[in-house]
Length: 145
Length: 303
Image 1 (cartoon, rainbow over the protein chains, first blue to last red):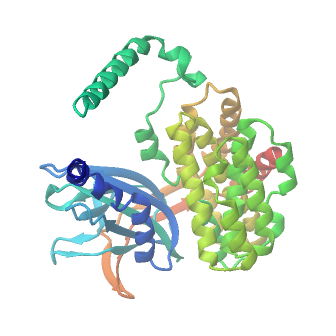
Image 2: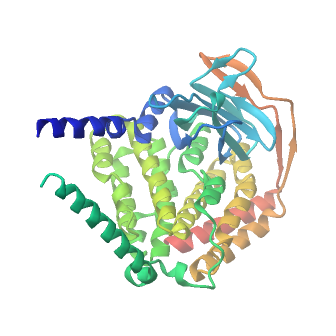
């Protein structure tokens, strides 16, 4: 009988149920992201979950940003997935800001954006090298200019 | 015996699956399907993904309040809607619109950290949220505790904003996106109303510009509302908003597209400064007409 329980327990762990039970939830990530954003005022969070793919799949959101406001975009990854998230802010087809600077190869957990034009902007999230990932992006308000 | 039990379990699962298959044909009779889904004449529903694309922060109580506070305009309780008016909000439409209006006021109060008044508004928002069955997303007790003890006031803003975001998501997930759009319309109207009051008292060019640039946001909001125009209440709201939109025809917004935003490191944070220039042309007469129309309309909903 003990052997049966042991096999059941092992099956439970190997099936991934154990790891799911203790996985980081999206709400946990929002909380961590809030800490990354420091004292900026929370406005909106974006939950990003993408499978592996080549080219890397993209999750897109649209936001309205207002002139005269300095916004902060923060990102944080789930430790349960390989993927490292990259956020890009676009206005139509122009890249305006990103958390991954290609020239330096550096990733930033937080970037600020000083908006001078009220209107719709697009947020593109993908995971580096098309790896599967779970992440949260946070939009917050730093100050008015 | 040990072999028989798993076998019986498998058989019972299979049998229950087959029974479910047979019942699918009658699923409509057994489940509470929202009325709008049963109506063939309903407008083509916009998928939540598409609404998500359009709707993210169309109007935000925090940003408007931050802009007002940033102009060093002192707090004025008279700008806000009286919580007594909420008692007259009886239908789901009225409650949703009220939720937006009082939500915007809550953002204004939170921005100025007026904790003595805020509890009244938190209670009102909670009641209205309960009225459309989304009160569970409003953490009333935590908000009241923070406000009463004046502890960590940033949390007050955070929890309020998160509550509204959750309400918005839940309404869309449960096929009640029309109410979500009405809440957004309420937040937008009250935000604009607050701006018009500040414009009258402070006459600051930046607040005038804020009113003018609502032309851009109003375009998106009207597109959202338009999808639900078969709802008579929303049709009336659209008709009311059209009167404001007409006045915005005299507002001209031009853009000078600059180069790529300049990345600089400020206070240890990579900062991108946009180089585009937005110019708004709006006559004093147009501004005055917009102010009058917005205030009349907003007061109509609050009476």
